[in-house]
Length: 150
Image (cartoon, rainbow, N blue to C red; front, side, top):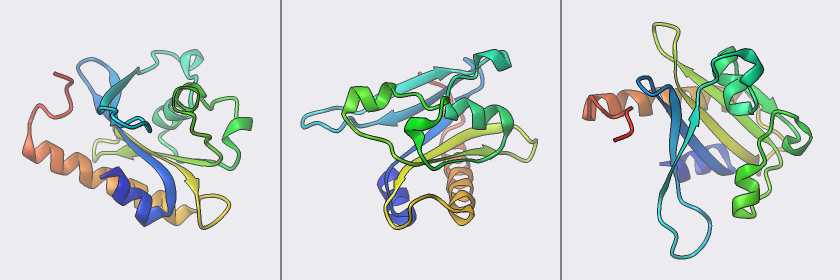
């Protein structure tokens, strides 16, 4: 799924973070970039206060606004943990909250390293929002417990 996002948006990486409302965490599945690696589920606790917003992921989640980051390494909200773990270098990034009909964020789409342009555009944010909305709907139809970590 994320490889399709990368092809569509012409970027190197993509992740869709889903909200587990019960546990108040965002989670995603990733496959680390080394041979023989298994899919890993990453979780991040939703901040309870503005002072706890320490990443682009939660800045977009809390503000309900897309964040365009031309130079991720220079943005104080950029969390370098995954780059450090994988050896990947995030250059630019787009972080898009997916908001439902009740104006609640249900997912966040992140894409990194736009390969065609030097940075992501508003059209890319629209596509991320659309893709995220479709993913949320498809998963909800397939499994009523889909957004809970089991």
